[in-house]
Amino acid sequence: MIRAAFLSVPLLATLAVGCPSVGGGVAGAGGVAAATRAERAPPELRLKGIEPFAAAYDTQTPVDLDEIQGALLVQLRDAATRVQQRPPETDREVIRATFEICRGLPAEGPPPAALVDFGLRSHGVIDPPPHLVVADLPPTGSVKLSSELRDRLARVLRRRYYRRVGLAVCRPLLTPRRRRVVVALFEGRLRIASLPRRLAKGMVFEVRARVLSAHRDPQLVIADPLGKVTMQRMRSSGIDRVAKLRCDRAGLYQVEVTGVGQHGSEVLANFPVYCGVPPPSSTRVFAHRPVLRDAAQVEGELVRLTNALRRNAGLPTLADHRALRAVARAHSRDMQAADFVGHISKSTGGPADRVRRARIPFLIVRENVARAYSASEALHQLAQSPAHLSNLLNTDTTHLGIGVVIDRSQSLPVLLITQNFISLGRTFNPKTAYRDAKALIDAKRRAAGVSAVSHSPILSRLAQAYLADFFAKGAKHADRKLNAALNKLGASFSRLGGLLLKVSVLDGIAQAKEIVAVDIAAVGLGIRRESSGRIVVFVLLGKTR
Image 1 (cartoon, rainbow, N blue to C red):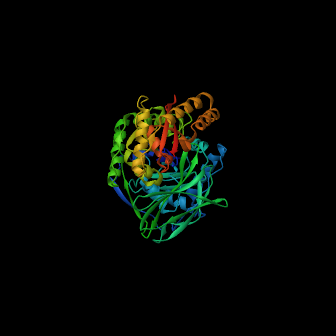
Image 2: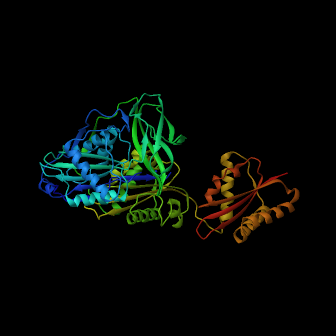
Image 3: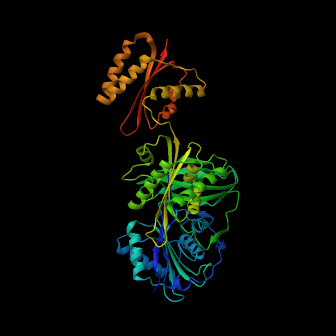
């Protein structure tokens, strides 16, 4: 019997606005482990991977299990049957990846994200980090799971369906006197046609994927060797989706497939492709994990690491925004309470809803969310995801708010992290709103190199009247009254057009392409602010004779 207490802790899970995956685990924390904690382990290990490595991704080759793996699989399938879930299948690639993770296990706590990533990708697994079950075994004997651990496995399996499972028993290199078991559960949301891990420079490869989950609108997101992120909507090809991967320069291309699910955009697959260079054959493993401090200190560390990443990329740093930090903290608390990691909340909506509700004037909002064990590990994994990296290295925001909640309900504390990035707009002032809007239009036209426009009092009175009718009696009534009034203007203008804008800040007016049309000579403005904080602007555009 396995004589080990255990803790339930999820591996890093990250999503991004416009992106994955929730992982979790159970790690040995007592019993046989307690007797070996005095064992001295080196602070760092260079782990050389087990060859042969996979030549291509997602081959899912059938495998003959040894006696120990077979016994574990039978017990896992029994646990799945108890909770009326279809038992997961296994294959050679997930078996080898799980053994790689087992070899590099630290003395305490779950395996580092870098180790998990190396194990998965070296052996051709494209899935986001799995839910891991880790426990200590007696030095010799059977691998019959304790009833307590079987119950915990059943609870894990009840929460969602896992399509694949990897199984391994080993003596980790950092703690060779301990015999440990690892079970890796994968949701398997996506299959791809065999894709080589290494491509020749200059090659163009068609990525063909099949979404197995309920996610929709899959996109291929790629970070090239210079960190430039591109997104392609994957087009339909029968029941598959396809997009192109171009190896334009030598180096590592981080490839990701995202899809829209219940909580927004999520990562369905994430893996590196090496163009004209060999994949790595080893990784570094550390024996001890950083100790988590209070949430405010972790937030400060995440701000520092984020800005360091931006400086290294030659980008300006982002200012820490106190009110935005409060919005991010509230979302992290919501994720903890509702047991999810994502952008869309049943109680608060999406990122823009939350920022708008806090009355923070913003032009652009971006968001990353993650679950991790340390600030440095969170940033490492976010930077490995092209969709999240795009947010970290964006050039269109100026301020940052990071909110962290530490979940101490587990034996090992877990960080729930929200990063919000915004471009601040000017605060709405009803006394100066008309003047501010005029200045924005003038500045936008100057920047576009087109002639200035006159601001017509007549058109402005009509625009203001239109908004009053719009809010009082609706769009159809307002349109009829406006058309009647415009007909009375006769030959004052050769052509008139109307533009109704709903923006979070007045600066949003400048994003409308119509205001820089070269044939516009006069404008009129009507401005109202809704109780929700949203600003409604009606612009009348006229060309004089």
